[in-house]
Length: 164
Image (cartoon, rainbow, N blue to C red):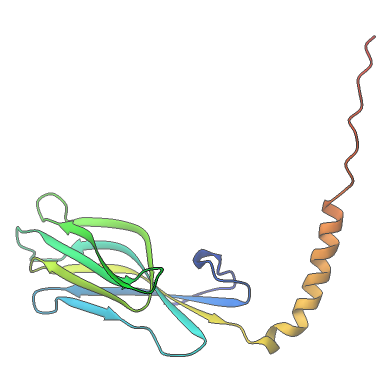
């Protein structure tokens, strides 16, 4: 499943990029305790994972299952953070909202035997080519300038009411 977006403001990306969205899912267990998402190595694309839910799978035991995410911080250093501590009796599922990270990302079952299911979205952002935009940009800029001129009318002083 794929959704395309012309507006990429969700990720703070500028101007001429397109966004595709795909479903993402992985399962962690004692047999497969981690999953690493790299994304494609293409030059003009960026890959993001948006985690939505972390939940215990069928057959989970009565134990704590701690899920940890490892990714880069703003300084380019690798950092690991626990994002869920699940237990079948009191907290079998956690909603992470829109917890978004840029690839590469590793999800690890730090404690417990699982199974733990993780779901969310995989975003692919690609920059539009210059030749695709060169003819349309001038027209759009002219329209924007005209709209700006119309929106900015001179400020007029308020009329005073006369007392009768």
